[in-house]
Image 1 (tube, chains in turn brown, blue):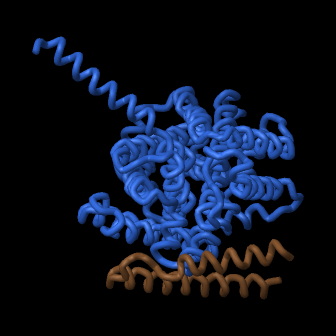
Image 2 (cartoon, rainbow over the protein chains, first blue to last red; image 1 turned 45 degrees about the vertical axis):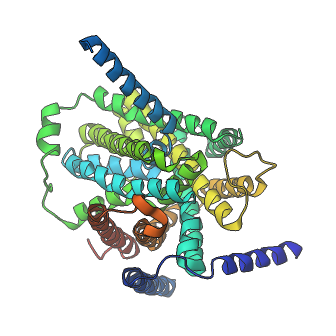
Image 3 (tube, one colour; image 1 turned 180 degrees about the vertical axis):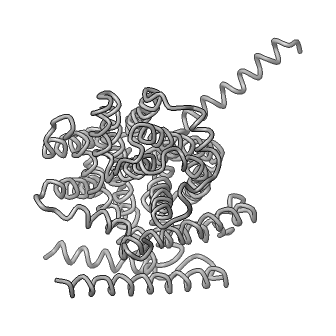
Length: 58
Length: 422
């Protein structure tokens, strides 16, 4: 229990430490990150679709 | 100055450069040669068996691809003194940081399982049971890592890299036709036309050339070794030599299977080794030894890539220069990753094919993100200063990265939906 508490406080500390991105958010950076988000979103949808079709077979 | 004085000074200058290179050499060579891991050997063996020498030209194109991506990690590590995971957390915030770290953990562990599958399959050819292989590998890696010095670890790893060159004598032993290699292999061509099967194999070759763990491993390795800005030039040379060696080894594997197993169906490198043994015992044995070594090298680097990344983010001591007492969590995470992955191939009926497919799919979620972060970080002039990407470097690396992202995505999707491209 103590270990889980310590772990959670560590995660919180890491989240606080890296709360603000240090890179200058220029148009190029913002655009790249937005495209990356869309790309990953589509990929996750594909994986979920595959997962559902596999489950259906079983 | 007379002729001999000029010659002496030139020799001294060259010798000094060689000595400096030998001190700095390591991260680039190790990461590049470890790139030819168990999965890589299988891909190259299948390439040779299926298409003979016809795709050697394509493998040569992978030298700049591997070099341009990996040399960026050298600059980033030497300038920031931070690993790739820490650099992502700091520059892009906790969301992208956790995404990369968790993804890296999953993909590294799954890849590690495939390395153990390769190693156990390779030694089973010599009658070594799988459980003994796993125990021996974990013990061996414990001895390598627990010596408390990065320098010693690196030299041992380089020794295993040297063993990876075993495919070179094997290729000479099969007496390939040099004129066929030049005629068929060096002129760009698509044997049998550009069909889906060929496309799948080309994608597999690219997929094995750049893996997410390589970016994390080399940058952390550069930091742990303590390379500075002044060492970047030699670090880049190290990476370049490594990229040539890795492709050369791949070509020699293609030559071996292209000569002796042309047209044979190859599902994995262990099968190729068994088939080669029927033709020539020594060549088959070389193939099996090379496969074991490739899996071992991959396992050494992949498990370290994860431990370094965890150490960077959780603030644990995370250097191979530390003793177990000084960095317990670094070594504990290393052995947990290693041992849990090693157990999987020993489980009867473990879904190993599913795991191999899953590696490709998960890698597709991490690789594009890691590559995009890499280019963005290399363009952060505030941090990188004079070592930031030049416009030409940006053009070359962006083209390469876009190409890798498109092809690896198609490769990942084809793993999810096998009938889509066939």
